[in-house]
Length: 75
Image (cartoon, rainbow, N blue to C red):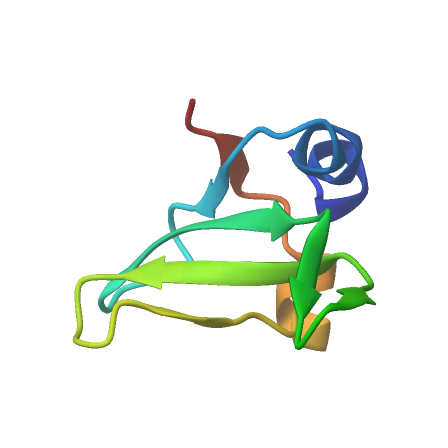
């Protein structure tokens, strides 16, 4: 699947992973929405879950990620 194909599913709460392009500790990405910080609403953003510690960080897709065709939904 392309990133454009998985994006609607991510927005709906699914998780997605690139199977070929990621060869390291990456597990999946997901959207965080309806969140607050210091009582202020935060715009939705992408997070990535990895096998490292800490295991969560913000995900900003690269051009390679956006152009890849090996995305899969995982949940």
